Length: 640
Image 1 (cartoon, one colour):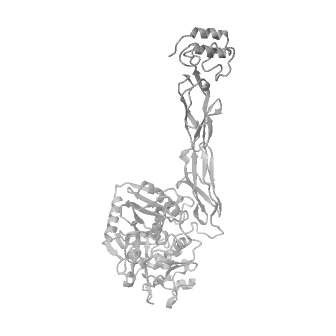
Image 2 (cartoon, rainbow, N blue to C red; image 1 turned 120 degrees about the horizontal axis):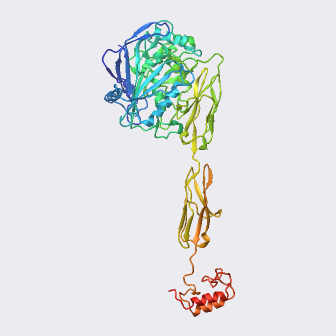
Image 3 (cartoon, rainbow, N blue to C red; image 1 turned 60 degrees about the vertical axis):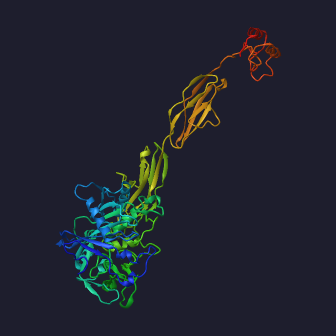
């Protein structure tokens, strides 16, 4: 029985049983070259439900549904079945009734008929990681115009070294090919054509053995639930689950660059959601006998003996698909005639990917290098072309009808301003009927729906990253580059210097308290700069009469300069403690009289106005008989 036609019990399936030739050789880690394909998968049945088909309105029973748990694509070491089973168990426990859940479901922008991505985050998800899921949600919602909701449950756990995580997708099995084809054709948008050339009738030709010309007329397909809802009919329940390794070195913000030792969580999320949306090949099963939606465009790359690579839409209708594990080796493609892309074949990487090459084909490549990111436009043409072919409406709005796609020709610039100022961010675009939605740190700004975002009287609370999501009538939404707003604080003085009165010889300190961005200080006396006085305080260790004056401090910063109020310094002078000691020997004697007599009648040859030991006793700026009388009064007194 083909894998996927499961019964009521849990089915544990390890991808063993690869051909001996596929297991020859080891990689740089000493692991078998096909170790990624050999990793386990865990099948868990889901309850049946009634679905309404979009194409006919008919109600059908979906009774062969299951989850498929597997290791995430980017892990660097094998994950055992026991580890995978334990990962699922801890994840499910986190989403048991009554457990706290954080829902990432921000308002959508542009066309409200776009897909709605909802992440339910368990309590183990780090707070810093939430922004990665918000970024992924914003981007994915901008890509597809399908009016459905896709829900993904997320948890984190310590999974040990080298393992990035585990993930699952809900799968609806045993869908009639004719029903799938009818849904793909009925769900076309105006730029879709390849769906009309799918093989008519109730079966699709497929070669499940790449070394054989035998063709199977397959009448049943497996479809991921999200892909089913976007294309074929209604379904309810969770579309996928993800558990990330809490010990893995993730970067949560690709907009500011990623170091080589880190992995962009946003890119990984978008890749893994891509699998939930239907980027899955049954070539990974190695058992044959079943196809996934992606396999309806999977062919052999070389023509071989049976012209297995279609060259025209007519050949697309008749050429058998090739869905086999590693057979022929490295010879698989996805082909929609207008374009084709090499695919992995199951070894060393899982077949549900583009082929790993020196240049990335798209984000659905199997491996992701440290330091790598596809930010800000994660999908390449290869990714969107394949999703479009399997039923997703890309671009939203359908294209055609004389529309032109949106192109952002001028992105917003980062700004550094002062608090209280006004700042504007703008985008310029070309394209039909653009609509705009600005986001701050990837969160929608209510009412910010024009090409220019103006912020008045900004404060530090406005600091952040700003980008614009631009949606057109007939194109996918485009994300502008992120512009950073830095608001510098105004330069202010909150505590002014105080006026002071001191005695000559006393110390004195003036100080200011100021705030602002990048502030500096310059003290002045009587409006003249004091050399070296460039801190928030100015100190005079021992004042003299000449220090008396008016002191101010000019505080400069990124947002201007402000001058303090003036602080007045008054210095009280102290009289000569030994007025008769003219020569300074602590005694007033005949030697002082001789020195005094030398200065009598003038004040010459003295460093002060009339000497250090002032001969001008009465301060009338001359040394005369009056000073002599004062000197005589002090004569003979000691100062020792």
